[in-house]
Image 1: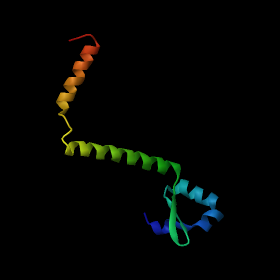
Image 2 (image 1 turned 180 degrees about the horizontal axis):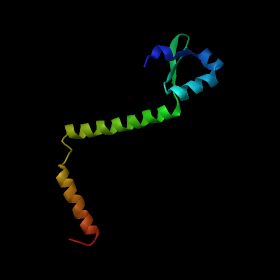
Image 3 (image 1 turned 45 degrees about the vertical axis):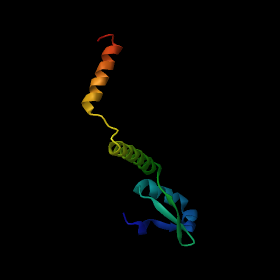
Length: 95
């Protein structure tokens, strides 16, 4: 993605709001808004925003998992499966 094609001054946004909204929806690319020559905001369509948020949530989960691995806070999958099966049998009245 070439960011240089997606940079507009705030005056452009004010004058072409409807066009900007259409382009965001159609292209799915964020738009960088400048004020006094400096980047001040990023605008993106809602679908792209939601996808970004989901991706960030998954990355946070992965980072948490990596930290737990580094700290040795893990157990073999076989141990967990055994515990879950045991709980399931107890819940069903089996032993």
